[in-house]
Length: 399
Image (cartoon, rainbow, N blue to C red):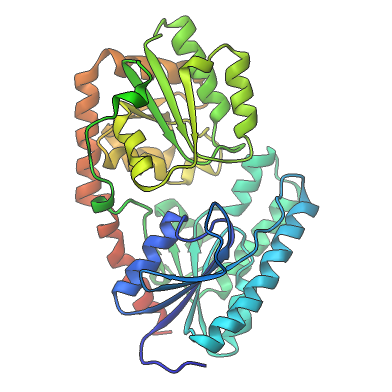
């Protein structure tokens, strides 16, 4: 095992490759800049297919993509079994080649504690990075609680009990760590997911992105079951066919299991000319779409998970000075405040009316965008989160 005086961290993430996972990459590069030795274990995918590479000083160890899990408990068991085997295999490799003093586990799933517990007996601390509330995520996807929900509650509780320190994406997640996870308040740190402002620069719009329309709505994110894309298509149909706003276009950036269904839904309603599906975009290509958009839309429906989750896309719209339309979610309001309009929960017609209001009141929309960017610069950007991440690490190294 390599001996070094630097503090050594191993970050483990299961559901996205790095550096594609923006939160994990911000954390990894922040720690590296602060003098830590950082290694990451993650899956391959989306063009990030090298089993090992070093980017910006961060050592990334990737394993093969797990089988897709869209058909119930058996499929998820195969996916997570695949991941767990690779976590332990690659952790041995990292331990031998570079060493680590802390394992930083990013859920979902709430299973990385298995690796943390194994290495706890070898003097390694465990920091839990609470990305998603897994029980509520299950409830949102399947519309019920059931046995799996309560199993996930048990796994969540074990995860918090193994963790020396946890970091939460917002105050709602912090409350779960303290109340449901029984963690000491001083061991839980809020590290918000937010863009690094210097990487999200405002530029002039690319008029080609608008496809000749006056108003472009931009969406960026996963296109899955719980992201509300069906509600967005409902809202678009009402906006265009009932409210008569035909001089509009929707740019949909992202990938996910429901993308073919959403495309078919748009086509079946005769809305194909009003939508562009770009697929996954990164860096300058993503910024070109968002900077060309007039309104950022976040159609995530109100449910037990989304109500307490911070949506990265909302933060990105605000950073680029775009007014936002979203459903009335607790943490959505906490992030955007006056930078957003809030539609009645899960009501696509009201969502359409909120978009219509912004189209009819562009100056007020621009003012909302300015408020959003000011909130990011003053309170919510990654520059404000970095200090809490580093404070969490100071705490874990005192354990």
